[in-house]
Image 1 (cartoon, helix red, strand yellow):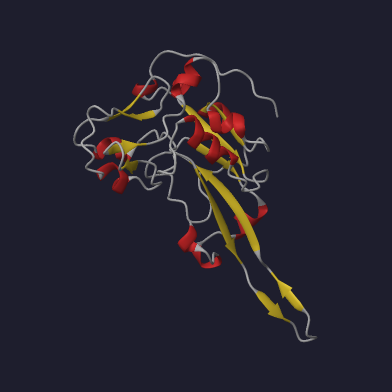
Image 2: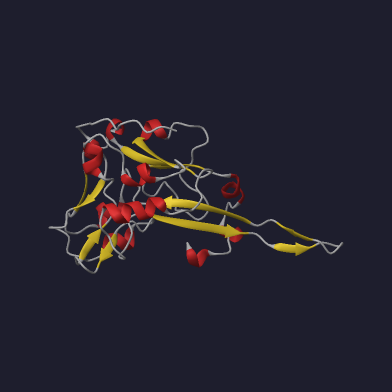
Length: 222
């Protein structure tokens, strides 16, 4: 997979025009859980050891059983999800922000105005994807901004460019999500109806097997 330069757009992402709504796609079959995307984001945004804007979650489950002949068999599985802010079409963080510090920009990115943010953390509590993170250092909310400065320059977000397996992609959401195998939810992810996330996943076989939380054994790590 090659990386084309991002189109530079101006217009009405903030008004919900799908032609100006950028988003991410994730090919789960390619992801090895290496966390290069997470580390690249942390380095580019100079986050240090504080909250990360993109995180890689491991889902695992299955059991080992001994059959009647004494041999051990298993149905163990594991898969990964690389997650950042999904720059939702209907972001609850924006709706619950009392100081009007959160808005969608012309790219459709959900961004925080640090000068307006009071650090109340209501947005962090309301987001089902836990994208807004409170920073002790700045005393306000910080989150993925879609690398809007890079996108404005015709580049892709740093996490997408850094992925060695090309598991992440980025572009106009309606274009990258236009695939019959794409879904917006796997395993224990929230119902996409809530916020209409601009994040499409091409699931791996293990993710299709883990249709509910009953199959997962490491919920505390997710």
